[in-house]
Image (cartoon, rainbow, N blue to C red; front, side, top):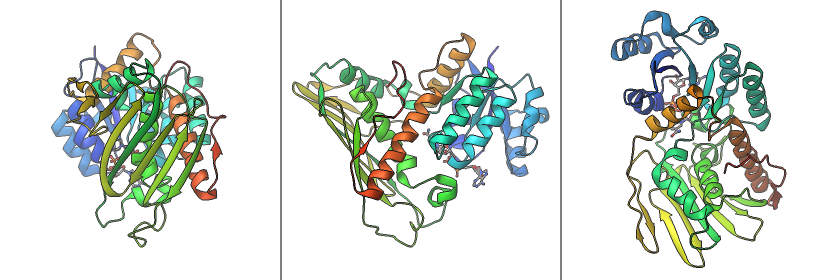
Length: 339
Ligand code: NAD
């Protein structure tokens, strides 16, 4: 039998990507929904054939404990709501996938890891690029030092936001601006290309072009990771600029993705020519990978500890920008064998 997934929060990502991907997955399927909007419940029920008994709102959610159709709860809410819903899902005895960033503080991440551990359930972060062929090739080329050790990484990711006030720019719900949302891909890209956790970071906020709109969070930010061997990663993220790039340079060559982080149409090149790897349905591959771990009791490649590590790095980047000093990241939790 395919494992049953319940999506919590039926916004843009659930509607546009996850639900359609769950029609292509082989090991899991869309079995339930959790939504605060009754009209969405009606529509999803029809569109995806979801029985009434598998439809919850945020108040009735905990009753999911008694529902054997649901094996995995997938939390796709605004960032600040991740922690409570992951803890509630674990208490209900379900495995959990949580969207990125894992939470808006390292303290919340620890609480989530603890709850899942206590319940004996798996916790994975929605890091879809860890099963994406182009990004896997960046990991291989970088970590195996195919062109010698990587000396410099360039990573940028951003989009131009419309003139509205979504939760993404309300600090209470988002925890921060583009760094939390898009910059986290640069953090991830730098780490999995170098294959190491950086030892320190410096960072700078950009001067705001739209200060009225971005009055609670940064509009754009740059940061520089330094690794143990002196190599660096120059990273940048923005809500007023479209960009998506991951590039690595080493003594014997270079390799890059452009675009690097989107849902499809990724393109890879090395100093020796094109990468020639396929674009796939990233979300289908990601959810099947997690389902496979649940079915065969294997550790996930994107555990809660990795989500915690990245939130610790995001906090260090903000601290570096706030204080205009170099911040040590040596106390950031390492994830065994996984970068
Ligand atoms: P969205 O704004 O489209 O949807 C958010 C949903 O949360 C909406 O359905 C909204 O009704 C619901 N919600 C519940 N309580 C809310 C509250 N108090 N305030 C505001 N909304 C509330 O956002 P999204 O783009 O679907 O993002 C959801 C999560 O998924 C975020 O954590 C985001 O970072 C993540 N995400 C990940 C990817 C990826 O590629 N992995 C892509 C997009 C979004």
